[in-house]
Each structure stands twice: as structure tokens, then as C-alpha cells.
Length: 468
Ligand code: FAD
Image 1: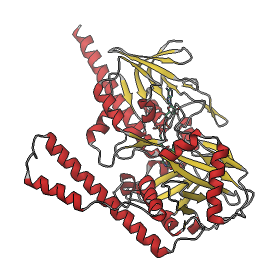
Image 2 (image 1 turned 60 degrees about the vertical axis):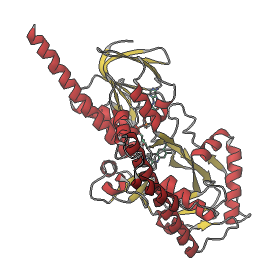
Image 3 (image 1 turned 90 degrees about the horizontal axis):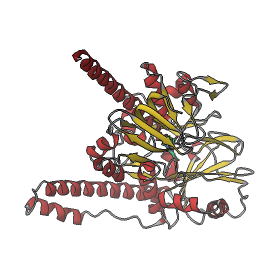
Image 4 (image 1 turned 180 degrees about the vertical axis):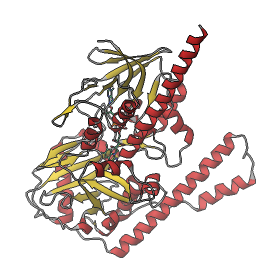
């Protein structure tokens, strides 16, 4: 098959769909969307489990109630998505030790303060190191007295390391979830500190469907437009001054003037895509510099509820001597009363570990943890769901995780087009990377940049034509 289109969009997650919508609104309708999986949504993905719809990927609309309005929150309101306010503030008072005792609030508060202070100190030290490195790179700073005294300061202000299970648990929560108390995060600064859990049977991806409905042909809840091609795994992008040729795993070839590439940072770091010619060095280096976070929500279904419920008990913490070992728990009674579902969140190393083992093993581990907290009399879970974002070759992780002190140039280079290939996705959003609204806004941004480029190209063509 090979008729040339204006734009090929690789990936039908929120950024790809937002990009396509902006193009359509600006009159660019001969677009082809190639999606590797059999569905739209990407990292927004529901699955039915234990009688309700659970979100394996993005679950919250983060950043609500602030000076600016979160565009994803607006969409959710417009389309009537059901949400539930999440109050994390009580989590630190629901810490269980291994014998099932709730850690006294005084001890919890002290450990919390210690962890926050230490995180802030760590950050300051990093900032100083960064500055010193920059000075050294500039050729200054050698033999500089001021610099030496800085270094001594670092030595004396070494952050305390978390030691007890409670400190480890809080350190995990701070670094792998919140950090907002340590560092201003643009999502919370701009859009507000409130977070709402999507608790809608139609799923978070209903947002994407409603967006798609405005420019793609849909019927009875399905997208039936032949510009959206599912199960098309892009393997090669061949680009030149005149256009881009895209080859898929099933041997199809598509041609276009431009490509918008929305695959995740994890996919860019993997060898799924071949570029011909290879991507330039500055691009590859920027891609390598961005870390990938793995974040896994494990769902457990029980015959009945044995945990304390109520809004202030929604989140609870398990303190174990191994950092991140089944630490962060949530009950789903606020979202879906009577569902008898618990969710435990693992990250990075622990995520990779459970992805590699059979689910029965993970179930055994989780049950042992729950019996530590709630006693041996509790019933076994009757079902478990373990998402595998790391081993999914169309994802290779959950979201981008830029170093907190990361320089603007890395973002710029990750986002910058290479010839006729434009980059988009959550990881290209300097302010909101890692979030659904980051993906959404990046898609809009990239399409606007592409439209501008198309306008310039047209101008250049008509100029050279009038010269003839
Ligand atoms: P994606 O959704 O990944 O879209 C890219 C698409 O490209 C995918 O559909 C993929 O299948 C496709 N693709 C990949 N390779 C190819 C190929 N070779 N050929 C064709 N297609 C390809 N954000 C929040 O705001 N709140 C949260 O609570 C939250 N929690 C999260 C929890 C988890 C477990 C995860 C995984 C993510 C979470 N996020 C959350 C982040 C949020 O989901 C993402 O930032 C956002 O959905 C990314 O959208 P995207 O369009 O950039 O990428």
C-alpha cells in the first residue's frame, strides 16, 4: 500500500490523538495514525477486574485547584468523567509495622520531617555539585578558594540516610511519589495540589475516544476511521529532504511528507525503531540522559473487606526493612464501594522483579505482607492483576523521569525535530513530563510546530515557483 499522506503519526496515545486533532482542526486531514497495539490510549488503559473497571496506567488527574486550569481536568468535566478526590495527607498516619501495629503519629511525624529535611539537603548538595561541574567545565573554578570551601560545606551537611523501616517507607513515598514537599513541581504549582482518581466504568480512555470523535469516524463507541491503523508496529523510519518512508513489522510501507513520533522514551532507548540515516549524536545522547520510571499498580480482589475503610484510611503504608517492598497501599472503597479491591504500588527494581515472576508468587508475597498488617485470619485474595509496563516492548517503562536538576538543553534536544521527523509525547514536555496533561499538551505543541514548518515549506515552494 503506498499513497503519500501529509503526516504519519506513530502512536495513538493521548499525545498522538491530540496531535492528530490539532492537524484536523487546521485542515490537515490526510493523516495516517499507526498504532502498534490493538487499541488507542497507550499508557491510559483500563481493564475489567473483579467486577469493576481498573486503570493499569494513568489513574489520576493530577494538578487541580490551582491558579491555572488543567486541560485534562477540563476535558474530564466536559465529557462527564466520574472522579474521586484522593487525600494522601493521611497516609503517613496509617503506617503499619511488621507486627501489624500502627506507628504512633509522633514517631511518624518525626520520621517524615527527617526524610523531608534529608531530601532537601540531598538536592542542595546536588545543585552545588552541578554548579561546580559547570564552573569546572567553563575552565573556571580551578584553585578557587570559594569553591573549596563549598566542597567542605557539602561534607559537613551530608544528608542523613533512612535506616528504620518507617524511615525507609517514608523515603520511598517521598522520592517515588511526592517530592512536591521537597521541590516545587510545575504540575502542582500551575494547576494546584489536588489529585482526582478517575473512577469511571468507561475508563480514563473515554477521554481519548471523545477527542477522537471530533475528527475521526466513530460508531457505537468504536473508532472505525481507516486513517487509524491498529496492530501496525513501526520498525523503520527512512527520512530524506523530500519525505519519510515508514515500514511496519507486517511488511507495509507508508509514505508521508512528515512524521510525528509519539513513542515513549523507553521505546526510543530500545532497538524497536531503526532510523535511516541514524539519528544524530546530539539526539541519541539526549535520549540516553532521560531515566525511565517503572510504576506498577497491582490489583487484588478479596471475597470481603477486612481493612479499615473511610476516606482518611484510603492510603496506608507498610514499613519493611527492604525499601519499596509492598510499601504503598490503597483501598478502592471510595472509588468503587463494595468492590473489595486493594491496590499496592511497586516501582523500578521491585516492579521489574515482580514482572519477571509468576503472578502466583507475587500473590503469595502480597498476602504475607497483608497478614503482617492485618493478622493471619484474613482471607486469601481471589484474583490478582499485575501490569507489565517494563516488559511491554511498546512501552519499556511507565514514564520519563528527568533528573530533578536537569538542564534545559536535554529537553530541547529530546523534543527537537530531526529532518522531517517531529517528536512528541509526555517526555517532550518540559513542564509536565510524566503526566497525562504533559502528553496532551505536547501533542498540541508538536502539531503547532509542524503546521508552522508546513506553512514555511509552502512559502518556500511558491517563492521558487514564482522565480521560474
Ligand atoms: P503513550 O500513551 O505511551 O502513547 C504512545 C503510543 O505509541 C502507544 O499507544 C504505543 O503502543 C505506541 N507505540 C509504541 N511503539 C510503537 C511502534 N513501534 N509503532 C507504532 N506504535 C507504537 N499520568 C498522570 O497524569 N496521572 C497518573 O496517575 C499517572 N499514572 C501512571 C501510572 C502508570 C502505571 C503509567 C504507565 C503511567 C502513568 N501516568 C500518569 C503517565 C501517563 O500515563 C503518560 O504520561 C501518558 O499517558 C503518555 O502519553 P503519550 O501519548 O506520551 O505516550
